[in-house]
Image (cartoon, rainbow, N blue to C red; front, side, top):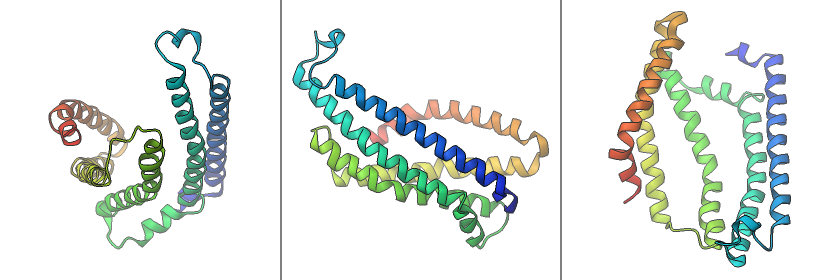
Amino acid sequence: MSNLYSYYTQVIFLVFIIVNHLTKIYLTRRQLEIYKTHALTPPPEFSSFLTDSDHQKAIHYSTAKLKVGQFHLIYDAVLLLYWFPMRGAEKLYLALPMEGIHKEVFFLISFMMIQFALSLPWSIFSTFYLEEKFGFNKSTPKLYLIDRLKGLALGGVIGIPLLYAILFLFTSLGNWWWLASFALLTLFQFFLLWLYPIVIAPLFNK
């Protein structure tokens, strides 16, 4: 993996992170200015069915979400810097004891689990403080925990076999691996479209 972390790769990735996140922050600031302009009354095209109080509540909620989102963007940027230019992903990969395709799969699973854990504080804050403050939260700590566990279990059942399949194609088919992987992912998406209303949606809509 050392080639992945060449000097030029790090510079390009660093520039991409900075430009991407600065662009998002700029667009967020622009959106906040628009909200401030229409803070008291809704635009004329919405005034017939949206009261001033409902509009103001929506504006305050959206403003609060965007302000929190700016800090989340900075947080995500720091994580990206650690994982790649600072070689956090390489350290995680080298720390895993297994070899071969099992190591690749376990690395990806470990990476996603760590990212999931690091995103939890933001999710909890958004659900149980921000949405609760504006009366939009319909969840409870128990329901929230159950949904997160269901999501992890479902991701493991569906995602792990898919990872093994793609990595098997990558190691077995040479230059044609991408075409076979594309075909597999296309079929997999159709499978999910069939599976979602039958199995997945009922799990989270009880």
